[in-house]
Image: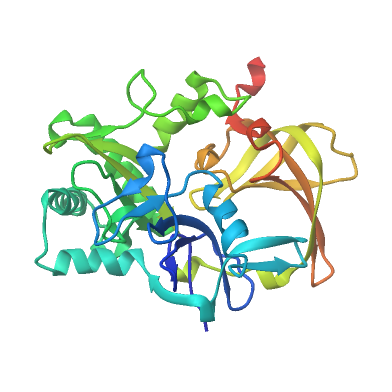
Length: 356
């Protein structure tokens, strides 16, 4: 029986590297994004796409480039979902040549004698975190180019995984304390006044000031300065195995109804760490939502809107109203932020409700 979770990496027989998305999958199939393809079947002329640290060159896909590549060239790596009335990209169990797990790769790095400047920093970063916390090495994983041994020592970042809700909460506190002590070499990537990236520019309802404030307080994006160059660090939250429940078999049909807006209060944000991010909410004001429709949660598949709000905060959302029909006969409604039409018109952010 196929067992996979968010950020695991199935590899096709052609060497295409996929990344598992979330935790809800059809039987025997992993819904995935597409991360890298080898030079034998794909070439990108985008300078930042090249990954040449391994035996052969790989090229990274950005935004929806990997999905388009599969649709055009490898349509067998899709499955049709009657529940969602769409095709999902990914791999059937029989199509997986290798399944790479971030937690096992990290253990391998620590146990092996193999080392270089980047792996030395990797070990140092985690050793410092483990020394001042109750976290264990088994609570972490490593993904991205390091997982696949295609990283470049001079250019690659370090992408970590932190497994478990309580572990995420402790790590954020640890990182905050490290940021506050300049001698540690850790700093918040969004702690300055200049944005380290330009992703916010695409979103029509998110200003630079709002983007920086939200990213800064997530605490999971860092830079490590105690190295021969500044190295970006990311700590991606992923559920532990005992926190995972595959709800896909419970869904009979999902209907996307219309784009809506709402102002809300967050009742529970403890599941917002993961992808998809789930916010339990109470709607305070709504636009384009019928009064008969009761909504109590927001689900976001947009990475920028993970960890966006805390319990007790007020926010504004613009996304898709969906009707969920379950096999049990239950019907519920939710607001979903996801890939597709009007992607950059979507928004999820805090507001000062009493001064709006």
